[in-house]
Image (cartoon, rainbow, N blue to C red):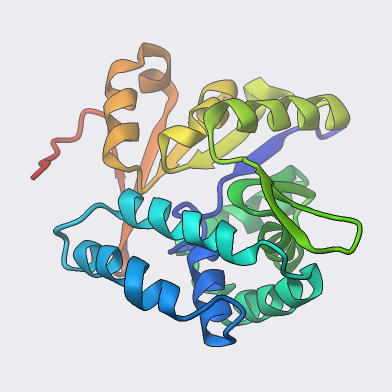
Length: 243
């Protein structure tokens, strides 16, 4: 029995942006979320990040707060309609390296999993597009009328991702020592630590600092950086500059 698994984060690892951000922008366009939210609040933080004065995580955190508030009370049918548009327009905007690895694992008969902090309704559609085994995203709770309650069960931290990996390992009898994982932030550390063949794809500063200090990960991690039309493989001891 082929019981090798491949665990993938999505945002920043497969997809070259954030699915939630793209969904937020579409909700603004369709005026499901009040456009003033963007112009009066989020746009400034986005502009600071785009000019490389601000931090992407600050932008994402602020947007996520307004995103969740804006969705409260919205029927999931509307949310799903916009989600389909997002995947249709953005589902191919992925890293070449990661897309290749997904296909490679599928050809080998490995079980392929998406575990992402993005909303579950977006992760499920992305998983369907790439034909993977199973997926989990942050769960957005709906009430008896199928309206979003404003409550979420997050999936962007390392602890929750580990719980889902444990579930998949039991369900599919995955051999972790022979398995693979791909992530880009410290939220993916559990995925990277649990398998025999971890890869950091375009790791952020915080993750790279952990990789330099974690002796076990240092020995087995592969680091891949995809930029323009070149894919680099580097060691955890790569020289970095933080400005």
